Image (cartoon, rainbow, N blue to C red; front, side):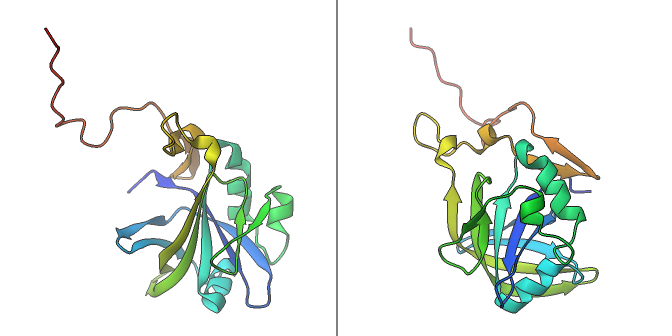
Length: 182
């Protein structure tokens, strides 16, 4: 019941060079130093096989514009079709791992598996982030990345949703109010 979750597109490549992309809603931050993330996959997934072979994968954040591709890559198997072509996703070669990334994604993470945990129906891959790529189109006036402008996609109980209205920022509940000058 920990919803909503980010819906991400995970890219992987087999040891012999075939690319795959799958949708993962069980993904999250593990720690900041070293920067690490996790994804959980069923062993029946083709991406699971590729990640086990190579020990690397890409995490590509999704947007409202990528909603169709995100759903499609979650319900079709790379064993049967070229999901990149079918979903009109542009492959972009990663710089630190032998894997493709998705050019349409506003943020791409290059990941190397540090640990695998078999946890019942899914295996969790805990991975170190080797590189982060962010689309400069989402830089604000101060040059900071504004992911919210990309309209991130989340997943909740079988539904894909956009994010809503900003309610506050980290620490706003305890921040001291600025005094008015007299």
